[in-house]
Image (cartoon, rainbow, N blue to C red):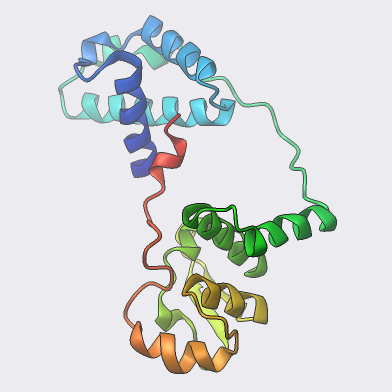
Length: 212
């Protein structure tokens, strides 16, 4: 959402020009230089576009609050480049199974990497559930009919996903339990952690993944 973009914009603006940026500093050349800054740091076109759109929203709010004059608004003469469409490339079944095997069995993975892998697999087996929805799931979202029922963070849409064996296995592994029977989840974990997030020690705020 916009709040996340604004947070990331702030982080990158500090990296770009330091902490003492005034509204008066944001002109056409500033925007061009920031665009170049993003390219040099390896940002994708769509990421740069998102940051510039968030910065534009900040300046619009400043105009509405009478702390910035619209006559100086640089975006009136600056075109935000539209990213080139990217064709998604799916993993083959063999590639996916290789990744899955590494996540489950490679002893060289540290805890953080392995947990990130669990999140990836959970998303996959939950029919493409977004990361923000995965880490926000509550134990109360697991219903008695073995379905996960939740409202998507991005759209608010109500979704049901069947609690299949792979999802149960991932949760059990996450909690260091070898038994992947569903009754373990219902009778033990869900009872003890009922009012908590399922993946309680995974951060919900993922702004920093865009901090290049």
